[in-house]
Each structure stands twice: as C-alpha cells, then as structure tokens.
Image (cartoon, rainbow over all chains, first blue to last red; front, top):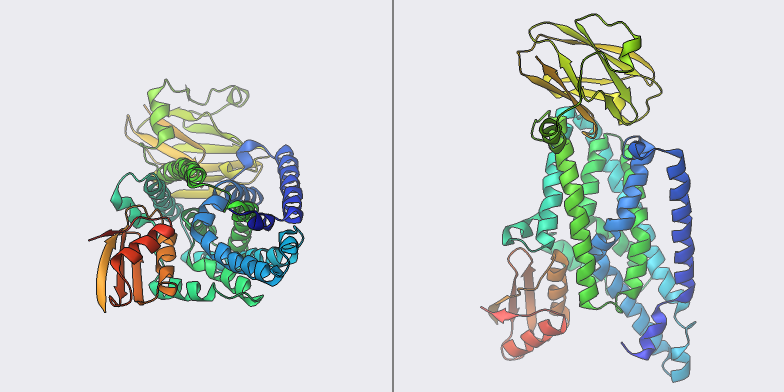
Amino acid sequence: MTDNQKPIIDPVILVTLGIALVGISVALVVFQSNSSAADIASDPGNQLMLAFVTGLTTGGLSCLAVQGGLLASSLAYQIEKDLVEKAPSKKRSFQVTAGRPNTALPILLFLTSKLAAYTLLGALLGFLGSYLSLSPITRAMLMILIGVFMVGNALRMFNVHPVFRYFSVEPPKFITRYIRKTAKGTDTFTPLFLGGLTVFIPCGVTQAMMATALGTGSAILGAALMFAFTLGTSPVFFLVAYLTTELGSRLEKFFMRFVAVVLLILGLITFDSGLNLIGSPFSFQNVTRNLFSPETLSATSEDASQISVPEDELLLYVKNFGYFPSTLSAPAGQDLTLNLITNKTYSCARDFVIPGLNYYELLPDSGVVQVSIPAQPKGSKLFFTCSMGMYTGQIVFQ
Amino acid sequence: MIKKKFNIPDMTCSNCAMKLESLEDVLEGVKLIEASYHRLQMVVEYDEHILTEEQIIAAVKKKGYTAIPE
C-alpha cells in the first residue's frame, strides 16, 4: 500500500463507527440486565437481539467474504477518481480530508440499500412462511436442514472435502455478470443498486438467517429479523471494508477460520434442537441425560410435595429456564394426566411440545394445563421439549 | 478463438469465481470467462493471437490465485 492510499481510512467514519459500536454495547448491556440468558432466543424481542448479535459477530465477516468485493470495487473506483481529481497537487492529494465525503457516502448508501433489501426479503420470507403454517415437526425438519447446511458450510470453510463446496450456493452467471458490470459505476445510484443486489449473493450465515425468517411465519417478524441481522453485520462489514487493503491474507484466513468455528457450533446446536423437536432419543441432551444418572422424579419433587397428586397424575413445572423435573417417572400401562404448571413463565418453555403424541400447546404464562397421556409400554420414554428444541425432558414409564 | 480450461485450486468461495470472471473486462482478447468454485475451475475463451496462456496465468496470479492449465 502506498502513502497516497492511506487516507481512505477516514477518521470521521472510524469515530462514528466507534460511537455506534459503543452504543450497541450499551444497548446490549441494558438489554441483558432486563432478560435472563434463557430468554434470549425465545421471545421475539430476544430473537431479534440474537439475530443482531449473530450479524455483529459472524454475519459481518461471512458476508464480507461474499459481498465485500462489490463494495470494495465500487469504493476503489471512487477513491481512484478522487485521487485523479486531486492529482495536480501531490500535497493536496495526500490530505486526509480530500476523500472524506466521497468515500463515506457510497458505503453508507450501499449498507442502507442492503439493509432495506434484506428487510423486504425477510418480510417476503416471513409472509411465505405464514402460508406454510409450520407445525413443530415441519419446523424440526427445517431446523435440521438449516443445521446440516450450516455445518456443511463450516466444513467447506475448513476445506475438509470437495463435496462440501456444494454447500456454497453459486448465483447464476447472468446475475454475477450483471452485478460485475454495474459495479463499475460511480454515481449515487450504483452503490444503492449494488447494496440491493447483495440479496442475490447471500453468505452462508445469511442464508441460515433467511431460513429462520421463513420459519417465523410472519412478514413483520421476518422483516424485523432480517433487519436486525443485517444491521448487525453493518459495523463489521463497514470497518473491515475500510481496512481490507490493510489486512494480509493470513489475517483474512484467521477471520474465516473464526467464522467457520462459530458456524460449526451454531450449526450443531440448530441440528440438535431439530432432533429434540422431533423427539429423537439421539439428541445431545437426550443422550447425555440418559448417560449420566438422571434426576428421576415422580410427583414428589420439592414443589410438588405441597400439592396432593393422585397416582394417575404427573406434575411438571414449566419455568423460564426449562422443565422441572427434567425426568418424570410414571407407571406404565395406564392412562395418565400430565399437569403443566406455569408461574410467570415467559420463555419459549411455554411452547410445549410432546413430539411422540403430536401434541403442541402454547401454555398461559401462569396457570395449569392438563394433557392426557395414553397408556405407554413399560420401559418406553416420551420426550417433551419447547418449540425451539432448547429445553427438553422425558417421561420414563416403569 | 480457443477455449482453455484452468484449475484454480485456491478458490475459497463463490466470490472468488466472480473475481476471476472480472478478468473478462481487463484482459484484451478474452471473449468469455466462466469460473466455478464448485469445480475449482475456470474456462477462458480467448483469441490466441492477442493473448497467451502465460498472460492469463499472470493475470490470475495478480488476482491472488494460481491457474494451472488442464
């Protein structure tokens, strides 16, 4: 990099960015103080925050790998143009203030347009999702697919096997060609247009988020989810786009490894949640619960001891952090009633699912809901979970 | 006009294919470049009287990749 190129890292932009990041951090701290960790990723508001944080942490870097070229090429032309315009005086061309308004605007326009485009896309996906009326099982299948997709992409980034390259969606050639030709423009319209076109070349993390938007089944929530995610990607996208010429290939590789690791972890969690939601005994939680001596309780837990419970009834406390007890012991071969007790429960634990009985109910935040459980054979297990596959438990029939 | 296939082993994402295809706009004598991340390949259709294989390899190298003629 030459000295003449260094002023492209506009101090005003970096300060603005710093302020924005501090603002985001403060918002996160304030937000966290009002919510428990378990609430995150459950309620819509927290889901949005999770989408935002995902964008801020992994989405920005991942998107940059795919879409950064568009922004960089547009900016490079702009910078080149600025330098040419200032060329008569070498001293003037080196001034930091020289390129300030010209470099800030295209990036801002690009990111704004990208934000608007993805918000619209989220609305469309959510709208489509509402017509699909996702049952817990459909949602489970979708989660498993998303999980496989994320893990596949992570393995692709680790270069594990050539087959994983097919997890990367290659946009049609006519689209990439059109985008490339348009990227040469320098007017105000170009970055706006390019930002909008990024919806056609989403990165792996974005594609996963798009699938989540589809799963919301609501145009508003889908739009809000994609808005939060894209907004989250913006600061990193912005910062790294500026510093991209400063980054060596080694640092870039480090970033990609980091994204791959996070993607792998998130993918496995999503996949596992999908397994929970179909009531699979092979999910991580169900396997480990059975491996380590489980906390098996009938209706005689500490809470339950205060309530007299008939023999053919079970008590399950639905709390913000999950189900208590997580393993219930029940007599085999007889019909039972499961009492689901909520008390100021606001997390996704309220969305109660028994996949084996095809039972799904959104429980009231406080109250008791009874579920009839038909007689089950001895030694069998009935798994239950929240609708996101986060909180789980089982009834063991003896 | 001839069509030549190159292996590009160091492509890491579909954006790399797009970067390589942008050579279409800068290399004189090139009619078409089709790059695929899935296959780690690039097919160049060019006028051999204007452009040489070595020049294509050099241009690819300038983009940060290695082109190996098939």
